[in-house]
Length: 72
Image (cartoon, rainbow, N blue to C red; front, side, top):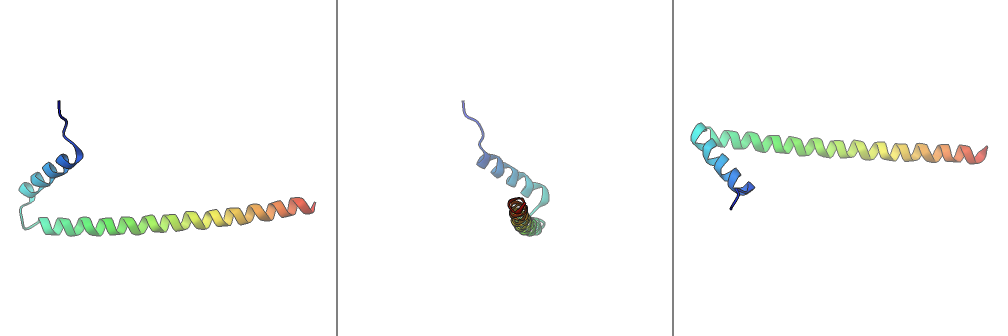
């Protein structure tokens, strides 16, 4: 018993999409998907930067509190 894998599903979807949209709209769709992927990666990098910054700030704050506790 064989199952359809992810690669086969992607290929079937691409063929169906090509039949529905036609050859004129396909490049526009590909360009739009590429731009969306680029924007998503940019957003993920920004989110990683914000998380890293918050982590550094929290660590710094924890060290300050630890110093205050030691002084008392």
